[in-house]
Image (tube, rainbow, N blue to C red; front, side, top):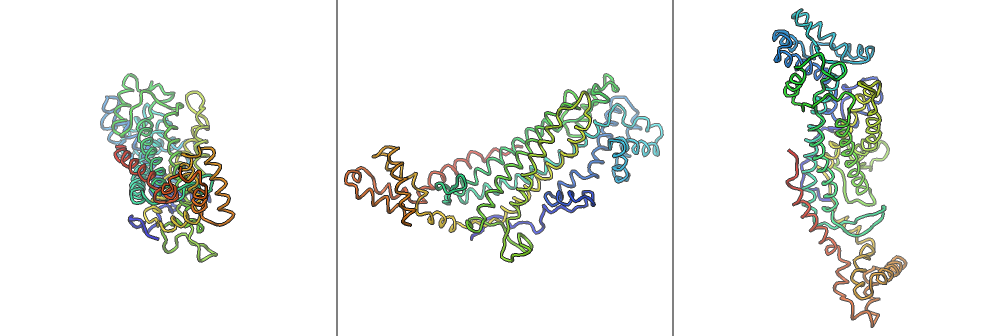
Length: 480
């Protein structure tokens, strides 16, 4: 096997997340951690959530001060108190369970911390906002970080796949349909299919996040009534300060833009699952065309010392299997009642991070696999040669159809293929012998063209050209 010219995988297995980001007593958290990454777990961890909620409160106070709705000194005192390290996060989480919303004990604790600094300023904490504004905006801030992580890892993987496709544009390989050998394509052409799906996800994430990462500010029932005429200006000021889109209206129970982003993350995870499926099948010992990078402790078996399990493919597939259920839960939460949902919004908030945790775990796992992927081009050729030329029956049919017509040529090659299987001979030899033995047919057939129809390199010419064209067409498409 000859390794592809990629950098070696990082020494640490990045998708083996430490479990300190989750409840240590929850068994499910152990497996969530196993399937994700430290970086994504941190983005959706409790400290980050609390800080994002406080960032929203600080931006709200600053915006109101800028529009004369509260004293500048009060905004300063509130901003200074908006530091998650000042609060006992475990206590806040426990209190949030009793209150039905984490925002309620957080606002209470923030008010007490501001009062310790400036009693007058404490009267202005959370003014004009509601719990959902705080929680939704915090989720948006966390998700902005999460999308950046996805896009960064995705960019690295697509670059690796593009290089792999260029390297193997001409490498013949069996194409397989319905899990059976079909005809000959090239490995580069196959990789291009993987790559294009991921590039579509790059673009979709860029577009959907630009729309979905929006400020949430509506007050009690979404009307901004507590802020009066200044409400829209306060919201615009906050959105700019937090780096979010300023929507025309709040979206408390209109979750369509938000859910479109979640759906795109699920689609990305599904595309990663497709790549992982192909990788795992091509890495089977009986096929042996690809192998994930090896190393101490990677892909071993507790019982069989010879095993080299495709662990990256396994982790990506595990996330891909979970994503449909996760996005189904999110979509099922869209029918929210009136101006604030009961149970559905809360279920959405709980499910939302899991999509991103799984997607990034799958991405990182495949990025590591392809960074050190081993490609056995010799085995790819032997797998073609071992099928007695049967995979060239379609190409031979095209040559014969010039004299026999399509239907008759197809029937003849079907018969000759059966003879090849029964006799163990090469289909090329049987076909040439049949043509040369037929005095009426032989003069009508270009036997050199018939021989070329059974040549793997000849079969690879067309997909190789398409691969180069596809790579040329896709090269400038990375979103900003």
